Image 1 (cartoon, helix red, strand yellow):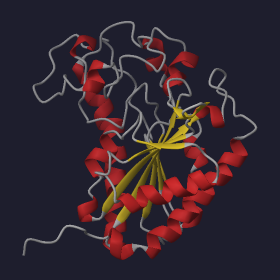
Image 2 (tube, rainbow, N blue to C red; image 1 turned 90 degrees about the horizontal axis):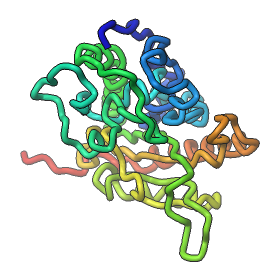
Image 3 (cartoon, rainbow, N blue to C red; image 1 turned 90 degrees about the vertical axis):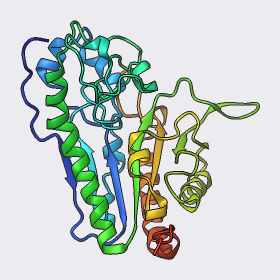
Image 4 (cartoon, helix red, strand yellow; image 1 turned 180 degrees about the vertical axis):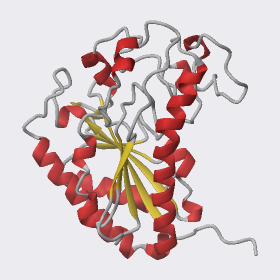
Length: 301
């Protein structure tokens, strides 16, 4: 890509409560739907196909966060353009016309799968670009979109820590209905929700247990860490020993939308009500369990 694309504007939105009442932060990194015209023109795919990687409406499912006293950080640009749940520079060298700097991670599993910081493919495994990019374009997207999102997210976590001494971050996602594990042996229905806590490394077990129990009580089929154990956000921010607990929540898209037309299903409102109830449960849980959620790692002093 020889030409430089138009610089993105307003890459994120933070929905703030009137007052920060709880040590909770919600984030939606993949629900953005602002597709720059230059990006769409550079793609070999139509817009409808590019949107197959989008976590459609996830930010809407969680938009009650400010009413409950917690912020919601949501991306406005799509995952196909730049994936915020990656390291800043996980890039496939085959996508670029020039040599990548030594600090770029070109060998991660995610890069190998075509799903780096700038993805090579969409969820349907179709190639996104007509031609190679240059590294200056990658740097421009990272500076304009990636850094503002993570600066805002880190700021929200730090603010909660400053006030409460700990923070729970819920990283909100959706997942395609195909390729998921079944609910149980002999039950052909697929899983409704996947909780990713990096097998207990990104948050205290009581956080995952609480969310699992709530959703299961509402008759959702829940599994943990299969097939999604968490991405960059859980790995980078999750540090339960220091009082930062990060849980990734994946919602089966078939529960609330038509995956071909992207239209909301009639069940959207009911699911949104259950998500709000879950958020409310987390508010009470977070405030009631401060001693168990603050710094778990003893100082060396």
